[in-house]
Every structure is written in C-alpha cells, then in structure tokens.
Length: 285
Image 1 (cartoon, one colour):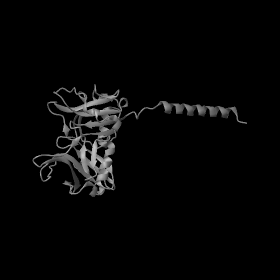
Image 2: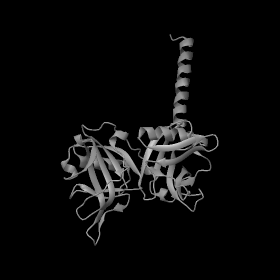
Image 3: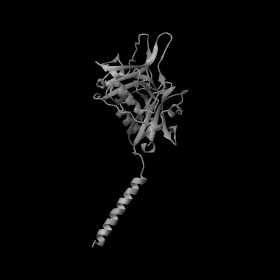
Image 4: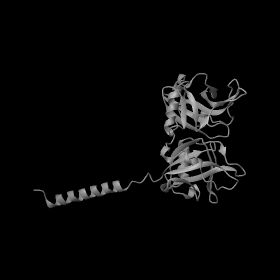
C-alpha cells in the first residue's frame, strides 16, 4: 500500500514539473541581451553581425570584436556612445555624411531617439548603423534599410586562420566604400564564395557558373566602357604578404589559400586593377 506521504510528494513533483513546463511555454523571449546589427553604406553594401551586452552599445562592441570590424567610437558622459567610423568609412567633418543609429520596431526601421548607450538590448532584436547623407543635421531616417530586412538577418562568421576547407574573404565595394570579412566553406574558392551567399537573401549576391566568378553584389554590376576600360568585381589571393590578382578562375584555386579579396572597382584596358592603399590585410584580424 502506498503511503499518503509518498502520494503527496508525487503530487508536489507533478505540480512543480507542470508549472515549470508552463513557464517554458509562456516564456518565449529572446536571449535578453542578444542583438543583431546591420551595417550599410551609401552604395548598398551591407552585412549583419551579432553580439550581446546589457546596453545596445555593449552588444555592438561585442559583435564588432567577434566579426573583426574596425570600429572607431567614443563613449563619454556628455555624448554617450558615438560611432565616427566603421571599417574605414568615417563621418564627414561637416556632418554631411555620418553613421546613423536606427532600431527595428513595429515592423519598420525607425531613427533612434537616444544613443546606443541609453538603449537596452532586451528591448531590440535588430539594430542598424546606416551611413547617412544629409544637409548637415543628424536627422536621417533610413530608406536603404528596407533591403536588408530582418528576415535575412544572418550574422557573418569570420575565421582568423582559414584553410582546410574554409576561406575568409575580404569583400569591398571599392574605394570609400564599406568592406568586411566573412568566411565560407568549400573545397575551392568558388565553392567557399558561394557559401557566403547563405548570409543574404536570394539575389543579393549573384555568381556565374560559366566563369566561376561574380556577376553582381548588392546590386553593383560590372560593365565595359567605350575607352576599353572596365568596372568589375576583381579577385585577389593573399600570398607572400600581399594581395596578388588571381590569374585563374575561383574554382581553380584550392581553399587552402586561406584569404581572398573581392573588390569592385575600375580596371584599365589591360585589366590592371589598383587596390586602395588603406584596404585591410589579414594581419588586421
């Protein structure tokens, strides 16, 4: 015969388990301090990163460190958290261009009413830093932000020591444009680059099977000009401490190469392609 004490104990356990289960079902909150950030320039080049911290500013610093973003910022009692540069794209001295903070709320991007150090991460899933252009006053409301919707918010990953089936790409829209690191997996560079597409909605990055290269990225497409020059997405490998132009297709380069530079710009009639002097190198990781 089972004693009343045992029955009572079982009932208590069942009640506790049911209560705990009810809590799990009802508590559907996100990781309280986790935030996804989109960073986008005026050319439409963008990428997502992800980090954690009590304040949005803390989470952004954490996300930038994880993704090896070169972040130039200040944090003071007077100005709070202020971003002046992201990956070599800096605020203009006359405020005609600057990094604007926005939050995704009620299904749309809205300009933040306060600085990132006054916003709590628990209140936002998505936050945007958009390089804005204005008449000088920081009153920008993002419109280009409609493209990188939260539905496609896949944070990039970056390997500091790629190889063995992984390639870390430095992707740049060219001089004065945003650049960022991202790692893809594949047996060769082309496979690894196509793997980068997972971070974006369909159509943002378009590759070509015909020449295992790149057709367009972020709506930026190469073209030829009457004088025999070209604009295109050029590809370089990091070898012997420098970026060297690829002389073969991406599919012909083993992923053991480690690092690749994908950059848009203008080439002369001989396809000579100048690389900006301030472009990042793998030693910056």
